[in-house]
Length: 504
Ligand SMILES: [Zn+2]
Image (cartoon, rainbow, N blue to C red; front, top):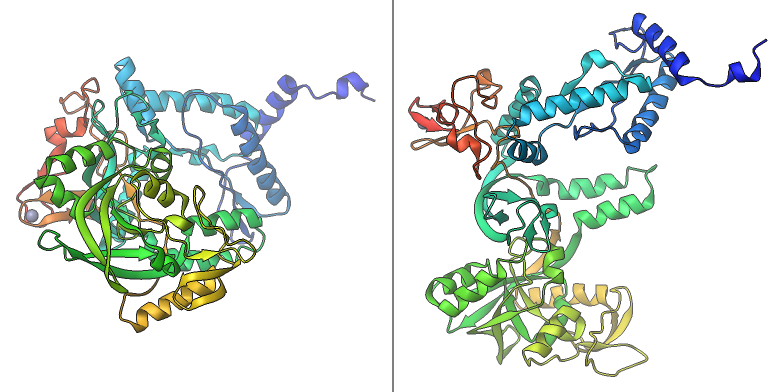
């Protein structure tokens, strides 16, 4: 009989013994076995920062339990491990230490593997890979080309966060209080050509599929639903007065057409075509929009920033009252890539609009009031849930008691019947932009040719691997900007279509 002391778990002895035995027997090596049902366990890949932390231990222990349970049930289990190995930190570490991101990354992977393996997880290490392995990202490149050819990847100009010191595009998370997380430089908003995945094409499908996720917590499904953000609204145009040629209409999308009779101003984004046109001709506008571009591009950054506007002097006509004119402002809180980049403000029922109206001395007529309290709005906008009944005093149906939802539908029907715009279902979900201005990431497998334009690489040429130092051109990470731009033997290539000199 073992004594209680002997029976205690002694990891150094028992783990070493059994891990060696599992290794010997290749217990966790996945094998094709047509007689057994297959089961695939995949946790998210760790980022190779250099150290395993307890979050990793927790995560991979859960996967381990599932994999072992399924093995015990007779499944043929595949439980591999990989590393999510591309990204800026490797490049920044290389810039700081004078090394190469590849060495930093693979060195960290080796350290982390050495920390992870003694945990005795049921992982098939023979299938380990890193996302920076060319064999892996060559597959990504093939998928990218398939998606490009299917019209699911495209290029367009987009406003991005630009770090003028690091000369790079920053993700929203990398902008802290308007400054680059690494350089501390004031981040600018710049328009650059970017690649996008057309995920918005799937908004409706994604939303409908949430109903099928029966076992997911309701709060997760709600978050997803809000992220996709379906809304019903009215798209219409204001006609302008005294506007430059080509700007006789300003298109607006609103989810609150029921408040149109409480409109007090129109505001456009600093990136709206009208603002850009004025910027070129009016130094005051140019100063103002330059200032606006110093705030980040996130909704959060815009939310926090002081609300400011510049009166363009242009006026629009209210669609339902010919002698009712509204001023057109350029405002720092309007995003170009949501809706049409232009709004009308109804201050009585939107706090942001009310703050703006009070700052610039604009009126704020009430559209509806609470059933039991008809005090007009002064400092605080009246914004009840759309499902609450309120009394409309400037609605489309006269003195009506309605919910916001009913009033929105009634407003859309009324406006459509008068030829003022049409009802539209919109989604908040935007296409997914990817920025590849730097070195340590999967090269986008297209070539830019003066004659043919953007040409996908031939699949037989994949992977388009990142250049290392082997071909004699050293990669210098100490200079800001994109090292790929300074690597002519990689950058310059032949067009896959016409054979003329082209650029990656
Ligand atoms: Zn060509």
